[in-house]
Length: 579
Ligand code: F6R
Image 1 (spheres, rainbow, N blue to C red):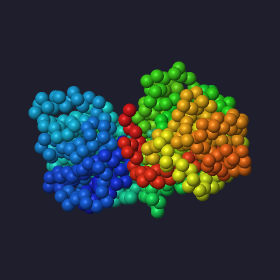
Image 2: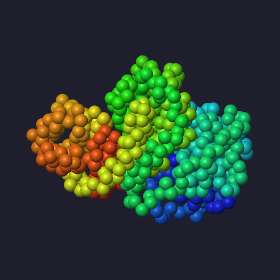
Image 3: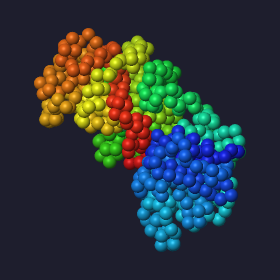
Image 4: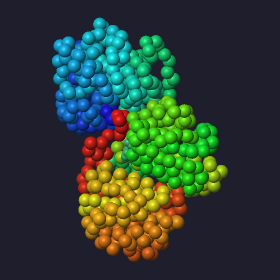
């Protein structure tokens, strides 16, 4: 949800900021822009994605600059609404990630006082409010304006006569990178890793002043110290590494991601609250929600722990009566709905646990304890390796609760992912890429796998796809089955295999093309399937992993066959920091 990046140092800043924005584009790509401070503040901005060539930064001279890549909330994606935004004098420039909830009221006041607005954004009010109080000290001006603003923000500000970049955050992520005679500030670490691994994750309410030599952080007007962290991620992790898309690279990273996650978790001090949990409630969104549904099956079936999973966006407004442990799961650790849901659980007195991928992310600050999923930076908007890393965390927790009974699964499961990566999905892709609608079905823990398969398909190929519990199809959706509507079914062996086989036959009788994932020696499935995809290994752990990977690849190759922009699906952005 919008990316911001600032640099101050000894080099021409606009070029560094432009490169940084390319790395942040996955957070939003409706428009982009840069403000540089030379003798005056100069701004260049444009609707659309950052072009490989042709965006002229010659006029943006100076060694301090701030930039923005936008996911539109207030105002359509066009040149005028692109950030940075300036005040009436053009001497103050602001970039912002977040939403200012009281902007309409503030804007009316500013207009009444004679300010002229050049955009429809909420952000522009910050520039005009600063204009009213700025008397040559940008830090003081920002500190005076922030209490007027309700909502979420991570902002970077430049002023013509001030040598600093001033940064501030409240409910939107902001990281400071400490370089060699250079300072950086960004929505996340990805654009900074090129230059330094020394990071400070700012806290809500922090205001930071950056000069090339130092960063000073203030909270409620007083200077504070924040711990510096040396992050493990490297700049290599945020490159495509020879793959055509980040999504494909991240899918192929998954055997290593799984093994690394298991290895790292074994070293981690696991919070005691998991072992003591009588009842577990899990809150999450999107792909993390689907992973959480798998966790519920595992907890209940394997560990006899009662669990329920709630969509974070619903839970926040309609929380059930709460008892026991509440777990928030989020790759980014910045998803607004999940943050608010966990905060609510905390306020209700429940112990809380965050399972996240990003060190120091907001969810870890709310929760009593945190577990890292160790997936490395995920750049593709469509989540893949974080899903597999989430499963690694769950399998590991189950293993602990079962006193090591799953250790052999954990050690060998990466092989199932490797084998899944080698499968030929050509016939399945050919079938899906002609379809307008596709159903994905499964039962038990494979039902969420089907939900996730459908989500992947719709978000990157734009084919309408629905995930269903296989037994539910006959309660309505059957009306939609036809020779034009393929069904992708995960038919893992186990208790429900027999009913699943009957469900599939019922669908076949309607002429529906069947793409079946099943045990490799399953003759019955092979006979009935239009396309049969063998699961490399069908025990619960390997089956869940390999089926998930196959459905990721099916979505990827279908979208690729249709020529879609896989890493930047329309209307989407990574890390949904607004409600
Ligand atoms: C889908 C996808 C989203 C996210 C969701 C939650 O591919 O990426 O559905 O899973 O926005 O994000 P996190 O896990 O960061 O809370």
